[in-house]
Amino acid sequence: MSRILLAFRAFFAILFQGRLSESILSSLGLSKRAPAAAAAPKNPAPTPAPAPAVKTSDGALQMLAILQRDARLLDFLMEDLTSYTDDQVGGAVRELHDQCRDSVGRYVTLQPVIDGVEGTFAQAPSKDPNVVKFVGNVPASPPAGGTLRHKGWRAVKVDLPKLTAGQDAAVLAPAEIEIE
View 1 (tube, rainbow, N blue to C red):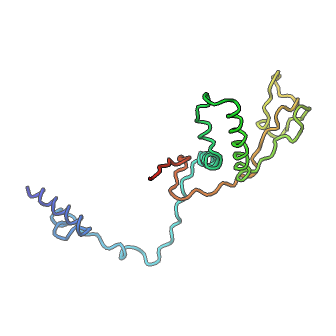
View 2 (view 1 turned 120 degrees about the vertical axis):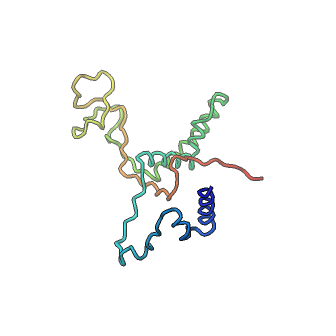
View 3 (view 1 turned 90 degrees about the vertical axis):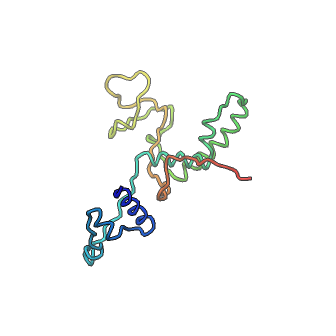
């Protein structure tokens, strides 16, 4: 019974005073610690703030959030289009295309991987075999070139805004609740 009474005393001491009294500490068989100020050195070296944990997916999620914010891309992609006519979808896509293009251009600088005319012969860059995908009747060893079907795209600069502290990159668009 005395342990229950001691537990209640300790609970209410912490609840109302934020600390345990000397009598409770001695009843528990504990000694009071020296104050932190006395134990700490007079001029402690400043500790660097830990770097925020950035996941590799944050940039991709942030770009999706920007496309949703500026062009409502995710709303369009998640919409069931079967009830709309081709003309209605085409009209929506034209506006969506312009808005998405502007958003991507604002944050990402793109350039073609091969700056050539599609449909003409192009040399494959010899420096990095990962920048070209050969399609069609491809021999066992990669050829020196072929007909350019797509220029490809390379991001030469990405300038996304910084995520604020505590911002969840996985929330691409917050839910909206209207108050009447």
